[in-house]
Amino acid sequence: MKYDGVVARIKAVEDKFFLFLVDPDGIMHDGINISDHRNIYEELTYDQLMVVNVILKDGTMEMETIDLDEFIHGDKYPRENIYLYIQDILLYTIGKDKTKTTKIADILKRGEFSDVAFDCIGDASKQAEDLKKKLT
Image 1 (cartoon, rainbow, N blue to C red):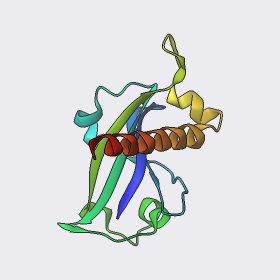
Image 2: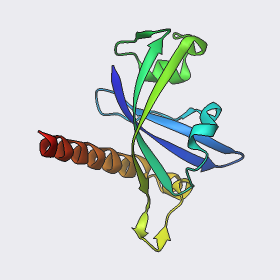
Image 3: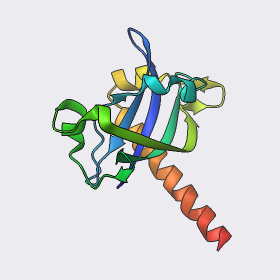
């Protein structure tokens, strides 16, 4: 199953990269630390979100719908055996205009992260549909 999500670079105690996934019910789950993928997202700044599609694979097999909350917080799924296939879709810089940006950490503190992330995911989906219409 393919999940929508966003990757954010958040500087709290340490500089870390987090993947936030949306389940089929439209609920965004807590972030998964993907700092092991640092080399891929090294250029991502503190005011950017990368909209992504994610497929969870157990070896080479795509996993069907899983309980994301259990995957993130529990021990039902052997995380060391699950591969995250992350496909970048669109990069967004968060802010009021091109001259003033907003750090993701500030958006999290205000409790607005899900709203902003869902806006980015929705916009990316709309742009993909528009492009598909142009190409057909």
